[in-house]
Image (cartoon, rainbow, N blue to C red; front, side, top):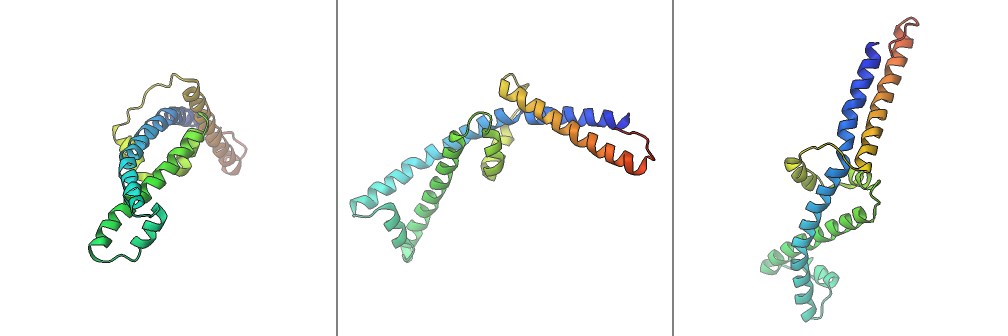
Length: 166
């Protein structure tokens, strides 16, 4: 009986947690979009400036690798900005390409720690009112309930002398 109660409690807790995945993902994508939009003008300016001298972004970055002195200092700033822009743009494209049901799963596999922490610091959980949120809640409940039911079933079989705990 205790095992069943714990399985239900774990299922309910995971339902609440999993139901937040779609809303958290939406806020993450908004934050990520803002960061990409913030870097875009800097990278476009870099591309335009080096283009005026006959360079592409790649050839300018290659030249930055051998730069010294002041040029090295300027290059390192642009290299960091361009690298971050390319990383975040690719990440955003991957998230935008995922369908609404898979987006939280893609995020869980590929999140950027600093962005996730930024979103989490202001995120306020809410009751899911969308089909996706309710589906994740149901999946979380079933997963939590199933795992603890199996664990208590195995433990009951091993140490319970045939008594049932789950």
